[in-house]
Amino acid sequence: MNPTVEPLPVHGHVPERQAVINLSAIAHNIGTLRSIAAPAKLMAVVKADAYGHGMLPVARTALAAGADWLGTAHVSEALQLRAAGIDAPVLAWLHTPSTDFAAAVAAGIDVGCSGWELEHIAAAARAQERPARIHLKIDTGLGRNGCSMAGWDALVSDAIAYQDEGLLRVVGVFSHLAVADEPHRPETDAQLEVFREAVAIAEDAGADLEVRHIANTPATLSRPDAHFDLVRTGLGIYGLSPFEDRTSAQLGLVPAMTLQTRVALCKDVPAGQGVSYGLNFVSNRPTTLGLIPLGYADGIPRVATGGPVRVNGTTYPVVGRIAMDQMVIDLGPDGRAGFSGAEVPGSALGCAAVLFGDGSDGGPLVEQWAEAAGTVNYEVVTRISGRVPRSYVGGA
Ligand SMILES: *Cc1c(COP(=O)(O)O)cnc(C)c1O
Image (cartoon, rainbow, N blue to C red):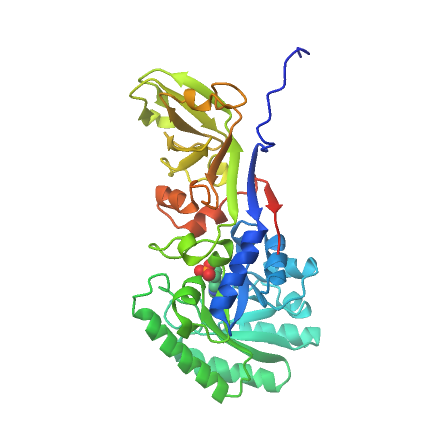
């Protein structure tokens, strides 16, 4: 090593790559959604590592900001909440015959039940000598999880029989909506109609329900008649809009995740320079390229060429194919002049590069990456991989 080599200047202490989670934004979004949902209660859906934001910090922030419930898909996710000392009401709703219902009952986790689970839950309750708390799930039209209307009477009466035996309590009836993100569609009305009927059947059979719930984020925002006793919000608590034609800002929500890294290389190339695997991009003029050290192993969709990266206050498009670890932005013919004020004069090397954030500075948004990838904002944030360290700012 040459001891005289100067260290590169550090631009504002930007780590190599990180997803910064603004917990104050999550607290703000919880507050906004709570006031929209009231008097219904609010469940913060923290499945899938809180849509990539980190389950435990998000769960704690959501509860401190007034969320009444937490929701997960898997019992194993709910158990992680309990293991971290979180004792708020938790519901888990997606099971397989390998699900550890005994652990769920022992940890006081509410479980969704679409049919086959019922006898397994009852057996777990018997073994644990503790009654289970279940929410019966009716398929009101989504055609995914949940009991069909044809089997509902039988499921309800079987559940009430176990309840009479003292093995469980039917504390909830719930369902999930298919098209609430398109508020004009009539299928939501039809689903709500079936839901009301299913609730009435359960109550007539002897269920003393604490909560009836069907609304996800889009229904919470657009269908007050779907709120019932509890809304289950995921996307909205992360500050993202479920609607194609309405932004986070228009909904009063603040995006919580900022994905950033530093420019790893900056170089001038002549006209005719091919870029990245396949050489799908060829520069049509002399230009300056910036290397961004994030790729599909970090969860950036490989197909998202054209996605925006903000450097030094300007947004540049990704050119050429996104690779496993890296991608390239075209800084343009004056791509060096733009960095005259940077700490490496005339070069973007080391500058902060932001892929998406809260948009407050006019910077790029998750939705632009979703569009570049042909997907939804849900998928973009959820797929940011474990290779990208999360860091947390703010709080409730
Ligand atoms: C993921 C999920 C939600 C949350 O949906 P958002 O649109 O993110 O609010 C609610 N309910 C169920 C059953 C889910 O699986």
